[in-house]
Length: 181
Length: 198
Image (tube, rainbow over all chains, first blue to last red; front, top):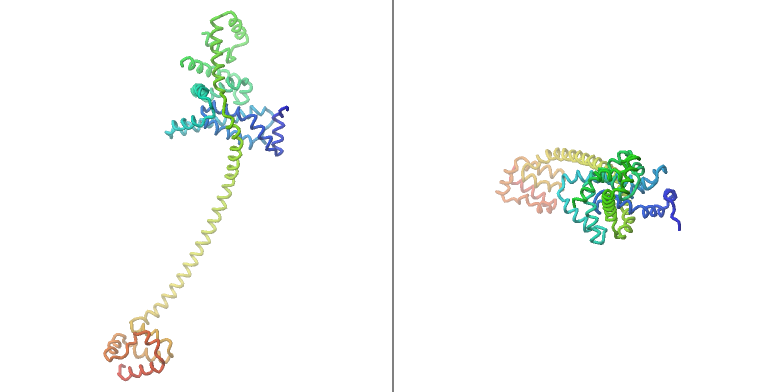
């Protein structure tokens, strides 16, 4: 059976179909989760942001203008929420000492079942966390989500030139770190 | 040097001319080609490692937990209204309660004033234990009461002493006074009279 396009599901949802919303969630939840996870570096924070984004999606879908595609809109929400979350966490960490404990809990509750996969992902997450959040965002969108600069520009609101420069610096840092490992 | 160029190429920072030149070199320069492929492979591995297999239960449970969270939030949405309503009820209750306290206080003040005034009057009356005992005589007729008062209210203590001295039944025996009949009381008065107490 052919998948219904996003705009049709949105229209159905706005007409009152919860099923249409569930369909949209199924379609995008993995992408939202992984973008948040790469931005934040652990499952617990990613889970929180993913849920936030899906709630925002539910509440704000009626304001969605069909000028852009739904996935760029969703990425924009996820990116903004993740960056805000990082900022909040940074402020919180200045007053908190239980960061180590949080990491342990996050590791226990992780949704990655295979231990080898978990170790590999851990390395990637550590590398990404070395990047400043804005560079990280661009690196993730370009390298993992394989979005074009124009799409990233639509998500981040930055010019393509700035994005290229940012990606170059991110790439340089990442490759240096990879070689030093 | 190669590294910088490779990164610029991957970031799409090269001009059209530079890019064409770089792609040409890639075909001819083995060292550059090797370095480029190593880097590209590393980035590819990084990408693969960043997409491991996940526990699908998490994603299946995501929707119900969002629904629960949303419902919880929609309940919290009414908190300002509910708290306003509760505050209003409390304020009204406190206002009503305080005014009722005021009412009670004012009524209490009035009662106290009345009691105090009465107390002044009664207090005089209760000046001595002997007089106190005469409250019990209120059940008797006004004329009898006044004659007893005439006899005893002059100087209570003295009368008691005198009554004791003459072994007249002591009228502090409330029960006795309560239970005596009118004729007995008459007799008592006569007896007092006989002792010429006045």
